[in-house]
Length: 568
Ligand code: ADP
Ligand code: MG
Image: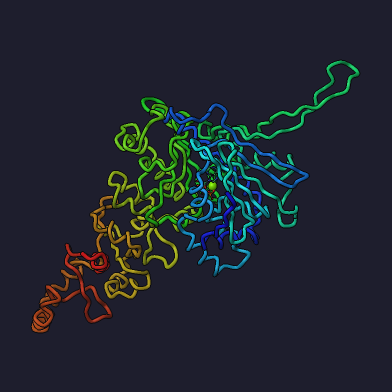
């Protein structure tokens, strides 16, 4: 069959173009991406092999191999993993299915070239990063169980070619024709064994499959006076240690960071690393990360869980949603459970008592880690909050068991400060001892809330009000949560009795005022009968003449809008 030329999907073309002309300084990361993909492919094959005894594959010597050729200026990264079918090559390599690509393009369009690197890092370009260091890339692959392989080739311009590869070994092999070494632009010599050795150590040491390279070894002469000879041997470049099984003291921050990048397919640093070793009834180890940057698809429907499940070091699945609730979907990590079957399915996971127990423990641990950031590392907490605060607060609605702890570990805008959000603990420490509720107001934005007449009297009396402007706020505030026994009360609802003492002292004046305004009030109530349920005098306002308030049990204006928008 002759080779066929295909066009990259438009989005892929743009990303490729970005890579070819990349000013991203960390060009070395292409190797980590290729090894990471190879490792995933080997994981998948081993699992298939264990599950499907009839699958005709050899899983006895799974590994990854680097083959540099200094004279031809090529580097080949190969694996004997699951491989790809022809359709998969087109789908996975010819298109960018990754959500958030549009968003990335939009942001790149309005970003300076020098900052583009950071965005690329945030997005995490996978396979295409090879075009930072290669002029031409050839990928040969054969899927486990299939007889004919596929050859894919591209120079990173708009097109690629596909051929049949009849005698391709099972697995995937990717050959880069390397760009000229350009130290100034961080293009190193990737055909040099020492460079590769160092890069694997640095980025991929923990990969659980051996990463091998053929090297020439000096062999001392067999007898005295004889000539030393050389011998070709395989060297394993990585130590393959499972980081989650180690105690934190044995692992460097850099090693954790690289591992984080491997499992999350992200390029940023972890903000926090959480290591858990449980013994007893359910034995498991967990290594969790809170990222320092929000992924592009944090709010997208198709976003999957970032928890990888292993059973005794065997990879089982990379999106074990059963182990982490949705409101902690930004958490990335590994859980290695000792007592699950390798055949465990999603359905079993959903029912499993052990999984539920692990999840409970992980959730508590993540929340307490957030609390610790808040208590001890204010800057990191701020980073956390600006990236994940809105997601974290979803837990106030969905996780009743932990809502109190989530509330405590959260911060909210407040009339106390224009810029600094407050914890509820700090809010309570500032309010007068006899204030037995926490006041809040919801709205679309801080500015919009601040303009509201509802705030006037509170401002005048120096009472602090939380200003809540995230859509999720609207939902959790109405769920009846309290904090340290103090109810959250909307300033836009019901009768807010701001000052009992005043009211008593002015009892006489008040009834006089009531009398004076009675005709106006009943006229108002009649005229507006369709729109309001009652008109009354209020101590709420100091500057505006009138304002609308909801009943104590009615929806806030924001919630009303939310419901209306969703057609209810
Ligand atoms: P990601 O790894 O984040 O999914 P990549 O761009 O690195 O994105 O890879 C895209 C997809 O191509 C992978 O998800 C995988 O399905 C497929 N792929 C890449 N490399 C290999 C490989 N060596 N073996 C099998 N499949 C691969
Ligand atoms: Mg990848």
